[in-house]
Length: 110
Image (cartoon, rainbow, N blue to C red; front, side):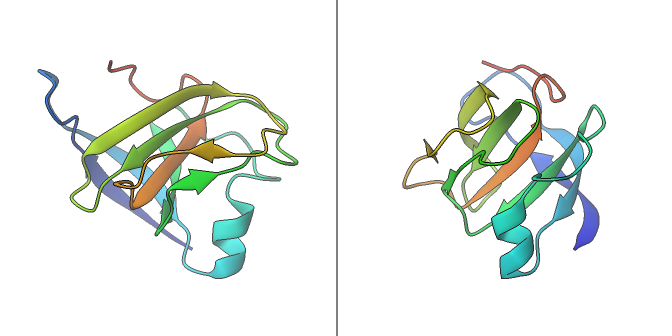
């Protein structure tokens, strides 16, 4: 797993891009685990899962927000307040990666 900053763009919005510090999953195990068993990320931080357009929250102990991004880093869908033990959260076919964060930890752009 590597830590880095990425720029997130809200396509079609008046909001300017923002940078977020993420831990990026690099292995199958890291992708499958996501935030399970981890301490809630700090405000402004998240967990990036590349090559992903759907997630689950099995075994989670806190609610999360999911920012689904296309290949250019533009937000294509935001799902807020996903409770633990959700079987399936679909982004969209355009989503190529997702940032998971603790609920309310990232800016609330709509």
